[in-house]
Image 1: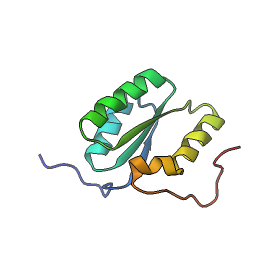
Image 2: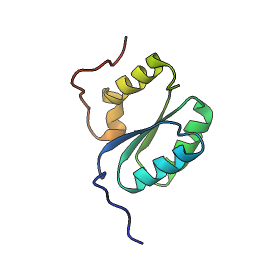
Image 3: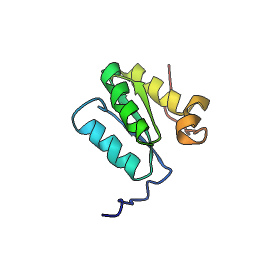
Image 4: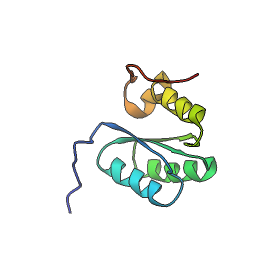
Length: 103
């Protein structure tokens, strides 16, 4: 079966809950569609492990620990995504117009 193409090639996606359940499967599917994946989860060890396995398969993926129930942690993950460090995953520095990046 040919790979799915939903216009996500070279796009950046943020996947929450990436340590278990549907999260790793979602990250794998989106990476398979050519997206760069930034994955988050409150379980840093399991999330990093899931992302390492995905990266070993050639996917552009990076894990950022964050509890989506905590506004500051989500803001920090988004701030990282917009930083120069994220260009290793995204291929460029991203800019965001408006919105809360960090407190």
